[in-house]
Image (cartoon, rainbow, N blue to C red; front, side):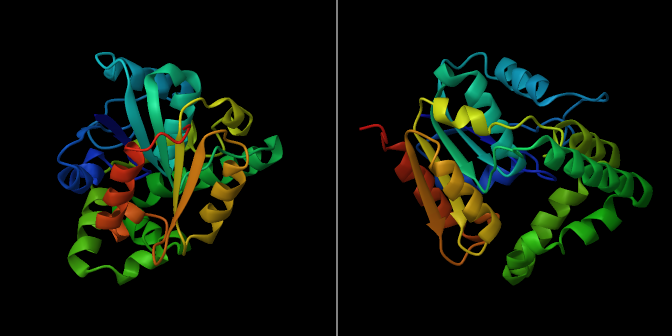
Length: 248
């Protein structure tokens, strides 16, 4: 079985190396999204251009399961909506379909622009110091020091230009809403959230009401990044869900 994994904001393909090790019977396919890691992009782009680039990378695969985390989840959902015949199972970890109203998107674009300017002005290290302390990642402060350091080093490996470009191009404010496409998803969809991440648990509950073939799994004791906070349980969930045909 092929499983394509899309990382979140400030992540890289290495985000998924532990998951790949825990799924020896699954062919895990990973790469860096635009603005991250070793990706090469200098000009602004759209979500549609990002998912078309992903489709070119995956041209050799007729079908695959698709997993996305946070920003990567928004990207995975956008891909599945455009190329539904290629996705056998969609797994979304702590992800959203974007913002419903134009006014919300405009407000978020303003915030993302301010953050992009902050990154460019202050540099990666100052940004990482700020980013790792936002409430969304509070639960990661309880992780072993060596795990926290791995996360920090991955974030520090980014460039100011790349992260700023990502925020401006495919940030939550820049992305078109996918809420209207949820009802049209033909494949089984698994939503995975951490019980301590109340915001994304609520988003997933709202999403589940719109998706025809859906299962929402809540992981106790975990926050936003379940694959980091409880990698063994996360791998077990992915493995079991890939075996399941939620459509019956």
